[in-house]
Amino acid sequence: MRKAIIGIALVAILGFFAWGYFGGIERVTAGRIESVLVDKGISPPVAACMGTRMAERLSLNQLRKLENLQARDGESAVPLTMAEFLERLRRVDDPEAIEVVGTSAAICSFTTR
Image: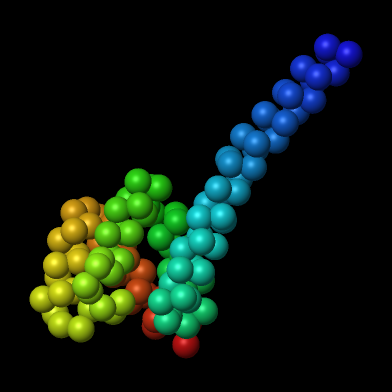
């Protein structure tokens, strides 16, 4: 009985690592990014493209930093002025994350048409 439980546990652990190694975590992350982008008004094909690119190029910590782009109390959901947009970018405080978002938006908006 004990050997069976250990065997099942080992198979489960190996399965989890194989899932992660072959991109399981990345696919889940890309799907979550895509759904957030669609909720913000980006078309589904562009959001899918951006989600994939961002999940491949950014760490989870960088993705969490991008949450600072969200509106805070007293701000509109979408920045209404360039100053407000730049202030939100400053809150991210990660140039690589901002670069990946910008290049992904540009590339995906042209390639999904």
